[in-house]
Image (cartoon, rainbow, N blue to C red):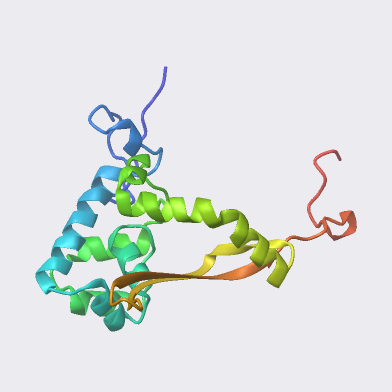
Amino acid sequence: MLRTVKIVASKNIWRSPSSATIPASCRYSTVNSVAIAERVQRALAAKASAGLSYDELADKLGVTNAYAAQLLLGQAKLTAGTAPKLQAVLPELVDDDLASMQNDFPMRTFDNEILKEPNVYRTYEAILHYGESIKAIINEQCGDGIMSAIDFYLDVGTTTGKHGEKRVVITFNGKFLPHIEQAADDNGAKSPRD
């Protein structure tokens, strides 16, 4: 016989054994995606009420515009140093939401439906189309390795083209992480074969 255990550490943690009303795409074993989605909606409403763009919000917080968006969308963790600034510029954010943004770990994932959104799809398509060239240039300039998406900055802006058209500029700024030779003597972990 199975027994259900209720966890009450945070309002974004499941408290109910029933997930019948939660869509399958929103279910995780430890995260209440509905509560997070509701918090995101409240955060976006507070931003709208404050009349701030992401650029303006970022300037007030001292972060990139993409990171400001990630904070409100539940994709980044709010730090203790940034929390008072966010509370000051978005006073409609309630204390419970600010606490959740600081204390709950983000589920850094996405709903596959987002890939159907033209802005997202075209950005994804550009990375796929230019991916092999991007890899070749990174390898040529940095060596064998990858760009980190953890020690990473993203900024989105615009510029004006030579014909006066508005153009989008997306800057990915990630730390280069070289692949290593896996020398057995350097491996500090006990072998699973011992």
